[in-house]
Image (cartoon, rainbow, N blue to C red; front, top):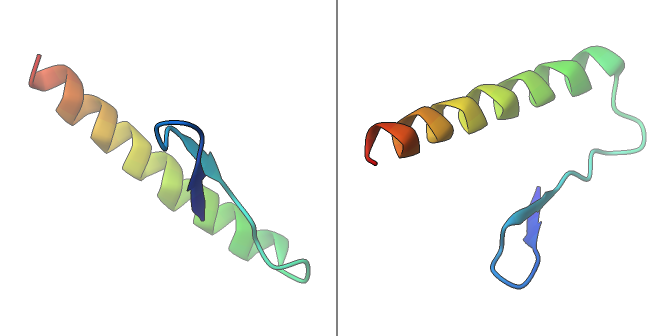
Amino acid sequence: LETAGSYGEVLKFMPALTIAEADLRRGLSIIRDCVRTAQDSTAASR
């Protein structure tokens, strides 16, 4: 995982080329949950 963009607003995912599909799905699920939590936290603070 790496950030990019002028303000670090882009997340770049770079899984290993040999990653198992199940591992990739699990990792993406974790990231999805983290993004949702961050969105909920941001919305609640507005």
